[in-house]
Image (cartoon, rainbow, N blue to C red; front, top):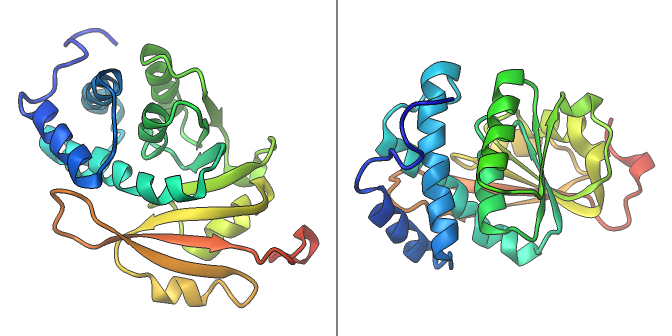
Length: 228
């Protein structure tokens, strides 16, 4: 797409991003900060035509999308994954944000909508993120090498998400599912086979509850005995 320059974000975006990173105690190089701002600008531009997100205000995009995705990073860092799959990546949230911040991770972005895949590929090319792989597919139909962690943001209820993607997760891996309030009804629907716990997330600038639900199989559970 042509038009506004890549940094056509609101003037306060850079200092607000710095505040978010400081609040989350995340280290980011000048190049990574620049990539995050360029991503935000690209999301704004493409959203006008491709309807990538219902959020239109640039300031809200920074808080509700970029800061929200960054808030997941400290929790993911504790697991130190090497290969992460973002299921239902949409506009690249949280997958592209994770790719910018952790260039040594392999990121697989799975999206069923072709126009969103076009956006993901364009951003990965423009921001020079060679470790990003974009797959235009539904999770249940996807076949590729397994991943250490599957992240997801507002895609499906927990049991359905596990059902459609468990074949993509390596033994010992985990799902990290971003939610609003603690989804107790969804957790109960997972059944006794799966272990899970809820970790609160603090999103700088957002006065709303956020959490990540960790889901995994016990180490002794084989693929054959997993839920279908």
